[in-house]
Amino acid sequence: MSAFCGMDTGLGREQSGRLFAGADRLHLLALLLRAAISAAAWEGPDAEAFRDRVSTAAVGPLARAELALRATGARLRAEAAAQDAASAVDRSPAPGAGAAPAVGAAPAMGASPAVAAIAAAAAPSGPSGRMLGVAAAGRGRSGSPGASAWPASAAEISAGIGEGLDLAGERVLSALDARGVRTEGLEQLGRDADRFGAVLEDWSAGGRTPTLAQLASGALLVAGSGGVGILEAATGEDSPLLDDRPGGIVHTVRSHGGRTPAPASLPDLVRDNAALRRRAGDAGPLPFGRIGIQEVLGADGARAYIVQVPPTEGARITSAPDAWGGQGASRDWASNLRLVAGQHPAAMDDVRAALSAPGPGGGPLVPAGSRVLLVGHSQGGIVAAHLAADPTFNSTSGAPGTYAVTHTLTIGSPVQTVVPADPATRVVDVTHGPLSLGATGASGDLVAHLDLQGLQVDGGRLASPQVREVLLDSGESAWDAGDWLRRNHDSLGPQGEPDRGYAGTLAHATAEDPVLRGLERELTGAYLGEGTVVTASHVVEVGRTDLSGT
Image 1 (cartoon, rainbow, N blue to C red):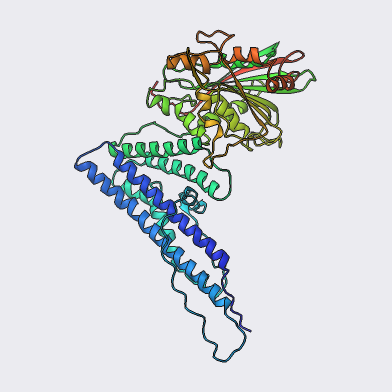
Image 2 (cartoon, rainbow, N blue to C red; image 1 turned 90 degrees about the vertical axis):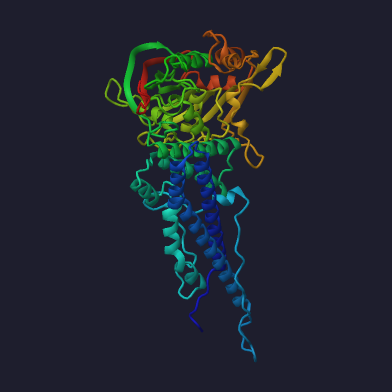
């Protein structure tokens, strides 16, 4: 009996599919790169010379690597077909038995039309963190057709991908550096492309189906970072636009000891959040933001912590680049985009740093493993929901940097796409809505609906039994867009009235709405109401490196 062992044709076809999917991703990256180069508002001989350099250094290797992947994928598929045909031949001795019929090579495959296939490439590996790693299909079986098909081209394909996968590849960046081209923005493009690709890859591998809002914001970040990268490379000047630098730089911890009454109700939590807010445009770009922490002694003597995350702060949305990555306060408009895209921006680093900052006694303000209530308005709510969804933050393990998030209350936040990491965590999102147009103007909170209520690309909606969305009529409407948002999105009234905005709506609705009534009942005695006291209050001034020049 022969010791020959044929290939595993199922694995061979599976590997062939990965190769074609990797080729699709390379094709997409090449298209994005060409679009970014073409979109740059720069004309003349220098512009054409720059475009030629980028095309030579990156687009060409991308195309060659794509072709190599397709060729190997087709060959591997043909080998699998040949193996199946050979295995199907009757092996019993028979007069005149001939060889198995020859099987021709499979036709070359084109790019898949499915978005999922674009991202089905293998996980990144290698020094740059962006090189596609593709496992051999032969599984080490000597003499297997798969063992001869894939390894023969592995070095060539891996080298091609390593040189040309994207602009952030180390070889490409080195080539551009040697020509005096600024590459920091291109590295950012590579990171954003990786993040966007990871979302698609998870989807294609059977993971969570992304939402339309997540895909749209991720694509915008790739396109925006591409434009920034081209601009920086063309001008040689650094731009903080869409900068993804980390946060967590603690400037000051302002603490107040002594016992004070704890918040009495859900509206009190919203008013406390509003008190921390530094309104957009009040002081232009800000060097840092604020996080509020209250240590609460419950009716049963147990300690817990209320963590307040205010909304977007600092420069106005029209102030670029300060409002889009320049200022030290990390809860800016670029962070809004990154959060909806499912990323972990500096605004989340800031909360982690605030909780672990040294307190008056020398230990962290919030000890690891403590029970925590997260409260956030607008972007602050997205930050809170994302932290609750992060198992390295929301955990009962007691490990450093982890906390038992019992509840998350978000106000006017698009958080339908976020699912808590701990099944015991309860999330309640309060939204003014539905969006409507009447005789006196528009009503409803547009910002809170920017996630399209969790609408996914397959037509479904992302939902979790832990997340309860409460839709409340604000009773406010206006024709002016700015006035409409102030009346329907702010925590307080347009002039800071404590009985209007979300605080006023909650004051009227809590007794009537079963979800709100249940939440307030669960929080009473632990974080709120009679028998609870605040034993220490802290305001942590925290942010990222300030690039605004203020």
